Image (cartoon, rainbow, N blue to C red; front, top):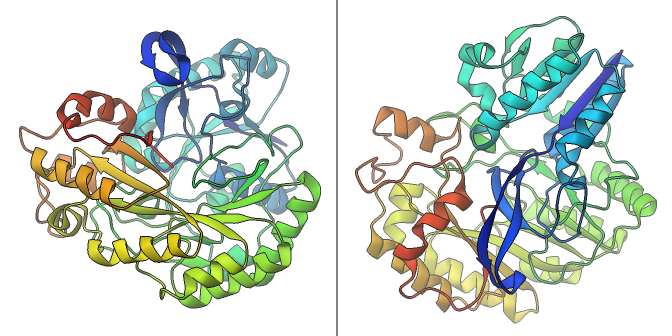
Length: 461
């Protein structure tokens, strides 16, 4: 049996755009980032179809990478993962390659921003390879049975899909419900899929201080916090589309992580490691264990963190083990928005102290902020601008709030209100959008006054 896990090309029609990086108004290629991104989106970049230029943001497709090796181990199937997004493959090259292959099953991970595009890709795959059974995974699977009518697929798997993929190749069809790995199963699973072609092409240039090639890894799965827009904890590592259900966090053991990191660093000569967990620093013990692992691995590293989930002295422990920087999600600079709309419950004054401590010990900080939340006023957006400017961050990103299938924000847009998000309102001022980058572009004029003088604008990070 041959199985393909595919992250197919996603190109957008080139358009004239004033981009400082390109020296003025230029015609540039836009491409989409799908699997591996919490909020799939489109972005401009240096690469063109069949012409890869290193430096564009492209994350590792975590769920797909783990499912590929798990399926191979459990079934004995020959499994291939082809990531056309990272290689910048053109549609022509992708389909030419596919024409020369034969697969029994083809899995594609999708979400709201790419779904209309991906339907067309799936139809073309089916036309060219009618013998293959097509399967959809990712947040879009939370649509339920109606997804089966929109594309030529035999199954859609909800949530992380190691177990679900095994069920499908063993005959399951239709909607395959959530079946997450237990903690023991997760720590006994094979390491995720890497190969010599794509392993060193993944890129996330923040936080400041990255050395390439860079490995994107997880040390845990899930997050207990219930930010309104956040997709993976609601639709992939849990089933919580309205923010009322329990969310689990499963952390890999130190032994698993040390064996995994030792293997890939030796094989691919990675010069830095990025822990792209939903929230890396959930608790002092996990940070202490991972810091001890990284001292032994001996390469610089960074992580996606919260400002308030470890004691202040643990930042120094991270620094001493090689951590050069962290990403921190602030989302808004207005406390009411953070608490009552986002439901993040982050004390912004404490977060400021954490930033001061992190920078004091010599680490860099990348901050993430979002605009256009449901019920957020223009004045509250300006509060975010002022708060951002006051933090002294090394880098930051600003995005529009994207509405992705399976998230509480998507549920809110259809129900009108959610109890856990008492300040969130879908009113006349709320702009619905599946693509955070597109939404931010449209909000730019509204946010122009008091805008920051430097930083990174993107839709993920």
